[in-house]
Amino acid sequence: MERKSSAGSIRNKERSKKKFLDAVGKILKTKGHAALKINDIAAVAGVDKKMIYTYFGGMNGLMDEYIRSHDYWSRITVDEIEKIKPNIEDGGRSFMEDMLHKQYDYIYKNKEAQKLLLWRLSESRKSLRKLTDTQEENGEYIFRLMMDDHFKDHAKDFRAIMAIMVSGLYYLNLRSCVDSDIFCGVNINSPEGRDMIKKAVSFLLEQAYENL
Image (tube, rainbow, N blue to C red; front, top):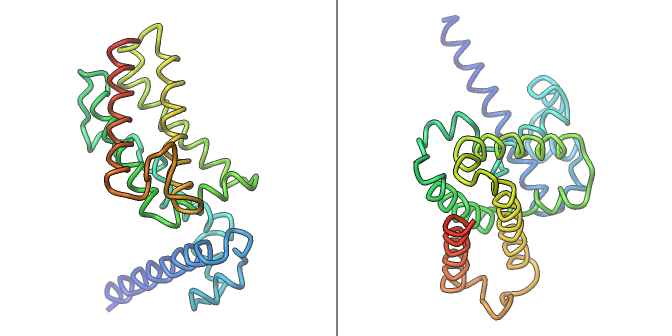
Protein backbone atom coordinates (compact mmCIF):
# COMPACT_ATOMS: atom_id res chain seq x y z
CA MET A 1 0.00 0.00 0.00
CA GLU A 2 2.82 2.42 0.85
CA ARG A 3 4.40 1.90 -2.57
CA LYS A 4 1.07 2.60 -4.32
CA SER A 5 0.50 5.67 -2.15
CA SER A 6 3.99 6.96 -2.94
CA ALA A 7 3.46 6.45 -6.67
CA GLY A 8 0.14 8.27 -6.46
CA SER A 9 1.77 11.21 -4.66
CA ILE A 10 4.43 11.48 -7.35
CA ARG A 11 1.77 11.48 -10.08
CA ASN A 12 -0.23 14.14 -8.24
CA LYS A 13 2.89 16.27 -7.86
CA GLU A 14 3.72 16.01 -11.56
CA ARG A 15 0.13 16.84 -12.53
CA SER A 16 0.13 19.88 -10.27
CA LYS A 17 3.50 21.06 -11.59
CA LYS A 18 2.21 20.73 -15.14
CA LYS A 19 -0.89 22.76 -14.24
CA PHE A 20 1.32 25.57 -12.94
CA LEU A 21 3.57 25.49 -16.02
CA ASP A 22 0.54 25.41 -18.34
CA ALA A 23 -0.96 28.35 -16.42
CA VAL A 24 2.22 30.39 -16.94
CA GLY A 25 2.03 29.68 -20.67
CA LYS A 26 -1.65 30.56 -20.89
CA ILE A 27 -1.18 33.90 -19.11
CA LEU A 28 1.94 34.70 -21.13
CA LYS A 29 0.11 34.05 -24.42
CA THR A 30 -3.04 35.97 -23.56
CA LYS A 31 -1.91 38.80 -21.27
CA GLY A 32 1.87 39.04 -21.55
CA HIS A 33 4.68 38.67 -19.02
CA ALA A 34 3.55 41.64 -16.90
CA ALA A 35 0.48 39.62 -15.84
CA LEU A 36 2.52 36.75 -14.39
CA LYS A 37 1.54 37.14 -10.72
CA ILE A 38 1.57 34.29 -8.23
CA ASN A 39 -2.12 34.60 -7.30
CA ASP A 40 -3.21 34.70 -10.95
CA ILE A 41 -1.03 31.71 -11.87
CA ALA A 42 -2.49 29.69 -8.99
CA ALA A 43 -6.03 30.70 -9.96
CA VAL A 44 -5.57 29.66 -13.59
CA ALA A 45 -3.88 26.41 -12.50
CA GLY A 46 -6.59 25.66 -9.95
CA VAL A 47 -3.93 24.71 -7.39
CA ASP A 48 -3.08 26.31 -4.03
CA LYS A 49 -0.34 28.91 -4.53
CA LYS A 50 1.59 27.41 -1.60
CA MET A 51 2.41 24.51 -3.89
CA ILE A 52 4.48 26.86 -6.07
CA TYR A 53 6.88 27.15 -3.13
CA THR A 54 6.68 23.43 -2.39
CA TYR A 55 7.33 22.26 -5.96
CA PHE A 56 9.48 25.06 -7.39
CA GLY A 57 10.87 26.92 -4.37
CA GLY A 58 8.96 30.05 -5.37
CA MET A 59 8.15 32.13 -8.44
CA ASN A 60 11.74 32.29 -9.67
CA GLY A 61 11.98 28.51 -9.68
CA LEU A 62 8.68 28.22 -11.54
CA MET A 63 9.81 30.77 -14.12
CA ASP A 64 13.17 29.01 -14.53
CA GLU A 65 11.52 25.67 -15.24
CA TYR A 66 8.99 27.19 -17.62
CA ILE A 67 11.66 29.05 -19.56
CA ARG A 68 13.89 25.97 -19.83
CA SER A 69 11.00 23.92 -21.18
CA HIS A 70 10.12 26.36 -23.98
CA ASP A 71 13.39 27.87 -25.18
CA TYR A 72 14.73 26.10 -28.28
CA TRP A 73 18.49 26.38 -27.80
CA SER A 74 18.37 25.75 -24.04
CA ARG A 75 17.07 22.27 -24.83
CA ILE A 76 20.01 21.46 -27.12
CA THR A 77 22.12 20.25 -24.19
CA VAL A 78 25.28 18.14 -24.11
CA ASP A 79 23.15 15.06 -23.36
CA GLU A 80 20.78 15.85 -26.22
CA ILE A 81 23.66 16.27 -28.67
CA GLU A 82 25.13 12.94 -27.57
CA LYS A 83 21.77 11.31 -28.32
CA ILE A 84 21.64 12.92 -31.76
CA LYS A 85 25.20 11.76 -32.56
CA PRO A 86 25.85 14.50 -35.14
CA ASN A 87 28.29 14.05 -38.02
CA ILE A 88 31.48 15.75 -36.86
CA GLU A 89 33.37 14.90 -40.05
CA ASP A 90 31.62 17.69 -42.00
CA GLY A 91 32.47 20.27 -39.35
CA GLY A 92 28.91 20.27 -38.05
CA ARG A 93 27.43 21.61 -41.29
CA SER A 94 24.53 19.14 -41.59
CA PHE A 95 23.84 19.37 -37.85
CA MET A 96 23.70 23.17 -37.88
CA GLU A 97 21.54 23.25 -41.01
CA ASP A 98 19.06 20.91 -39.34
CA MET A 99 19.10 22.88 -36.06
CA LEU A 100 18.49 26.23 -37.77
CA HIS A 101 15.62 24.86 -39.86
CA LYS A 102 14.08 23.35 -36.73
CA GLN A 103 14.54 26.59 -34.78
CA TYR A 104 12.71 28.44 -37.56
CA ASP A 105 9.78 26.00 -37.44
CA TYR A 106 9.68 25.72 -33.65
CA ILE A 107 9.40 29.44 -32.95
CA TYR A 108 6.83 29.91 -35.73
CA LYS A 109 4.54 27.22 -34.33
CA ASN A 110 5.05 27.95 -30.62
CA LYS A 111 3.21 31.05 -29.40
CA GLU A 112 4.72 30.71 -25.94
CA ALA A 113 8.25 30.68 -27.37
CA GLN A 114 7.41 33.89 -29.28
CA LYS A 115 6.16 35.58 -26.13
CA LEU A 116 9.26 34.38 -24.29
CA LEU A 117 11.47 36.06 -26.89
CA LEU A 118 9.57 39.33 -26.55
CA TRP A 119 9.83 39.09 -22.76
CA ARG A 120 13.61 38.70 -22.98
CA LEU A 121 13.84 41.84 -25.10
CA SER A 122 11.72 43.95 -22.76
CA GLU A 123 12.84 43.06 -19.24
CA SER A 124 16.02 42.34 -17.30
CA ARG A 125 15.33 39.36 -15.04
CA LYS A 126 17.56 36.85 -13.28
CA SER A 127 15.81 33.83 -14.80
CA LEU A 128 16.07 35.37 -18.28
CA ARG A 129 19.76 36.11 -17.74
CA LYS A 130 20.19 32.48 -16.70
CA LEU A 131 18.49 31.45 -19.94
CA THR A 132 20.98 33.46 -21.99
CA ASP A 133 23.89 31.96 -20.05
CA THR A 134 22.55 28.44 -20.66
CA GLN A 135 22.19 29.14 -24.37
CA GLU A 136 25.76 30.42 -24.55
CA GLU A 137 27.10 27.39 -22.67
CA ASN A 138 25.29 25.01 -25.03
CA GLY A 139 26.43 27.00 -28.04
CA GLU A 140 30.02 27.01 -26.84
CA TYR A 141 29.96 23.23 -26.54
CA ILE A 142 28.63 22.90 -30.10
CA PHE A 143 31.23 25.29 -31.54
CA ARG A 144 34.13 23.57 -29.80
CA LEU A 145 32.89 20.06 -30.60
CA MET A 146 32.31 20.57 -34.31
CA MET A 147 33.18 23.95 -35.78
CA ASP A 148 36.31 25.40 -34.18
CA ASP A 149 38.67 22.73 -35.53
CA HIS A 150 37.03 22.91 -38.95
CA PHE A 151 37.28 26.70 -39.34
CA LYS A 152 40.50 27.14 -37.33
CA ASP A 153 41.60 30.80 -37.70
CA HIS A 154 38.15 31.68 -39.07
CA ALA A 155 36.22 30.13 -36.16
CA LYS A 156 35.25 33.55 -34.79
CA ASP A 157 34.08 34.64 -38.23
CA PHE A 158 31.78 31.63 -38.38
CA ARG A 159 30.41 32.45 -34.91
CA ALA A 160 29.59 35.96 -36.13
CA ILE A 161 27.75 34.49 -39.12
CA MET A 162 25.80 32.20 -36.79
CA ALA A 163 24.88 35.14 -34.55
CA ILE A 164 23.31 36.88 -37.55
CA MET A 165 21.49 33.76 -38.75
CA VAL A 166 20.05 32.72 -35.37
CA SER A 167 18.90 36.24 -34.50
CA GLY A 168 17.62 36.84 -38.04
CA LEU A 169 15.42 33.75 -37.89
CA TYR A 170 14.10 34.87 -34.51
CA TYR A 171 13.19 38.26 -35.94
CA LEU A 172 11.50 36.87 -39.05
CA ASN A 173 9.26 34.68 -36.90
CA LEU A 174 8.33 37.54 -34.58
CA ARG A 175 7.69 39.80 -37.57
CA SER A 176 5.48 37.18 -39.24
CA CYS A 177 3.34 36.79 -36.12
CA VAL A 178 2.79 40.39 -35.05
CA ASP A 179 3.38 42.69 -37.98
CA SER A 180 3.20 41.68 -41.63
CA ASP A 181 3.22 38.76 -44.05
CA ILE A 182 5.74 40.39 -46.38
CA PHE A 183 9.42 41.00 -45.64
CA CYS A 184 11.83 41.95 -48.46
CA GLY A 185 9.15 40.84 -50.89
CA VAL A 186 8.93 37.34 -49.38
CA ASN A 187 5.67 36.13 -47.84
CA ILE A 188 7.08 34.76 -44.59
CA ASN A 189 3.72 33.30 -43.59
CA SER A 190 3.30 31.17 -46.71
CA PRO A 191 4.78 27.66 -47.09
CA GLU A 192 6.56 28.82 -50.24
CA GLY A 193 8.05 31.86 -48.54
CA ARG A 194 9.17 29.91 -45.49
CA ASP A 195 10.77 27.32 -47.74
CA MET A 196 12.67 30.14 -49.47
CA ILE A 197 14.03 31.27 -46.10
CA LYS A 198 15.18 27.73 -45.29
CA LYS A 199 16.90 27.45 -48.67
CA ALA A 200 18.62 30.77 -47.98
CA VAL A 201 19.85 29.42 -44.63
CA SER A 202 21.27 26.36 -46.38
CA PHE A 203 22.91 28.56 -49.02
CA LEU A 204 24.54 30.81 -46.43
CA LEU A 205 25.86 27.81 -44.52
CA GLU A 206 27.22 26.34 -47.74
CA GLN A 207 29.04 29.59 -48.51
CA ALA A 208 30.48 29.76 -45.00
CA TYR A 209 31.74 26.18 -45.07
CA GLU A 210 33.20 26.45 -48.56
CA ASN A 211 34.70 29.94 -48.45
CA LEU A 212 35.84 30.72 -44.90
